[in-house]
Image (cartoon, rainbow, N blue to C red; front, side, top):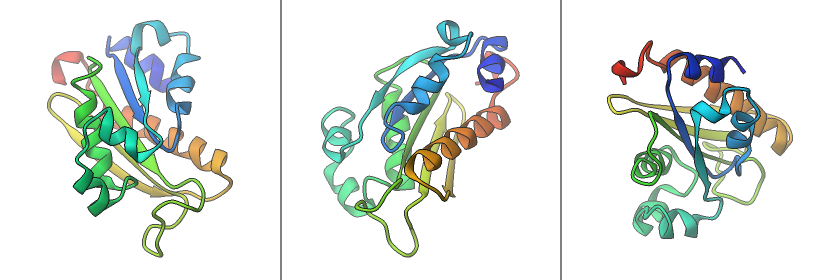
Length: 158
């Protein structure tokens, strides 16, 4: 994976908090030759109750914005920083299949990701199509693209 190689070259580490991808993002990064030097770890908080109980996302925030939203995804990325020390923290939520908080404005296939460094915070919202696994894999590819475009040249620029 080009993204893992770029992280290793820059001596950067990464941590994930995953909902809709259910650990697949961390798993993909763990299979790269550079995984031992870049991947710090990850949390899977698929159910909204875990977002609240483990990462302390306020219940009112989950109720108001829904667990699959840009606002909650940002909150997850920011709160992850207190649990897993890393240079880059990424959160991902979304709707891979029916039964969540989908609406006409937020259909199944809508995925949210948020990247945090010490100096930068970047959000993406994408709508993917296909079966749940296809949506997850497309989202992982998009997150890798985001990381490559937002990654500093050196760790000093975080």
